[in-house]
Image (cartoon, rainbow, N blue to C red):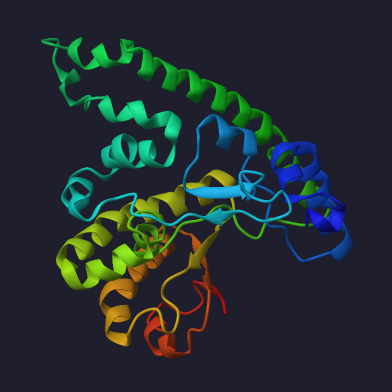
Length: 296
């Protein structure tokens, strides 16, 4: 869409007016049934402020004319499953986020705020917040927040304008299969493949831990937008990625629970089966009729 409008991918990530113009031109010229928003290219300046390490993006790791690329790695180590399973949100904030955002590294020093329930020692957990590196992190977060607001203003205007022009949104947000969530950017493809053999029970526990989080992620987005369709891209379940037995053991059970949980919340999972799914068709039939939409 950037090239079609005469812009580079780098330009639409740094000049928010250009992303609005590029995406609007695409929808107006091609007249699809619905629109998918223009939020996918994240704001480049925000990524720079936070020293984002999980992706290379135009002008930052790849050429200005190239698209973004995920830099797979083990951002959760093989021996950290227990910490993740015990408290996934704390792990995300104190371990994962500081690893993928260089500016957030000092957050690893912050203690859990569990002991704020009593006055005794209530000041102790706040001591690290006075340290210069931690304060620099919060300054970066404030700067990133200001940039995000600028970007959100353009994105929000686009989201309002498209339905008024006859293009309703075909989705209100996204969630993922728990296996993909862990395998894409937590353990990485190599890491999660090894885990299926070396520590399958830990992996299964982690998938169970992620399941309600993935349900809540999708359901809350749908309710906030007033649009029941939730995008679910399937990355590692395609033919050839996993054996039939591995798919039935590690991939499908938690994915099905997420889909069923979304349905129970009144959400319509819009599932994108990326790659061939010919060997999976009999398994994925085990869903209520008329409650999901699939793209193959």
